[in-house]
Length: 117
Figure 1: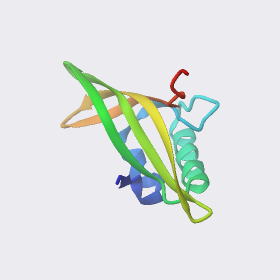
Figure 2: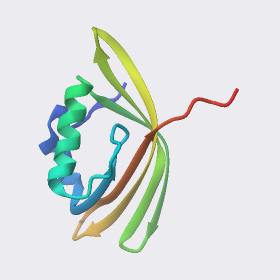
Figure 3: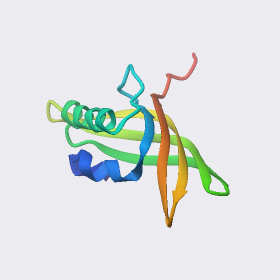
């Protein structure tokens, strides 16, 4: 259905982000622009959404030398009151190549709006 997001451990998610990464998360009213703020975001997300998993949908990936942009959507699922709930969201990731690794330098995510009636 989806993969466990860092197994609920922020320390397993943070290595995918560069030290100067910026995150505007689905659940955040504020932008997170330093390591401590990113860690705090994931700690809170894993608490508020127990058993958090993510399933990626369509992705559009473009590579520009040592930078890349990935735009798409994903669906978060979590357990609340013994019931699995889902939260569809859209995202954009910007990556920069650091040696052999691609690290996230910018991550924006927001809840998918309801389809117009």
